[in-house]
Amino acid sequence: MTATPEVAHVPDTRRLAPEADPATAPAVQPGTATLYERLGGCYGIAGAVDILVDRLFQNVKVNANEKVHEHHGNPANAPGYKWLVTSWSIEAAGGPKCYIGHDMDTAHEHLSIDTAGFDAVAKEIEATLDFVGVPEPELREFMDIIESYRDKVVQA
Image (cartoon, helix red, strand yellow):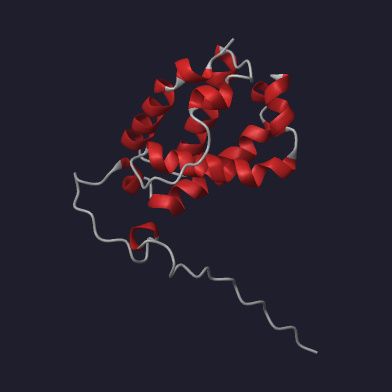
């Protein structure tokens, strides 16, 4: 008996806004593209976040904070966290409004995140963007956004 290969699942993107799907996104003139567009839209950002969150959940320095580890130590939290980080990143990079989570102050106020914890997360973000091939100008621009939230996230 011959086994037939499984057919790859192709997502049905017909219900997405045209600009959200790389196959139907309108052409953007160089110099007018938002950071969101230059990062690859929702597909590019979601792909990077998928890798990032897996790295954060495994990062010893990030998880040294017991309150952070309570969340990151449970693999069942990863899918929801990936969605929140993706939607936050889409908005932060100039994409469509889609983030429904708390503001940064409220989201982090109970976690006692210190400078070392913030720096550990920032290093993972930078390493992930580099790993997925984000060009240096876009990487720096996104890291500047991350840095602008330091005072809202660092609570200890």
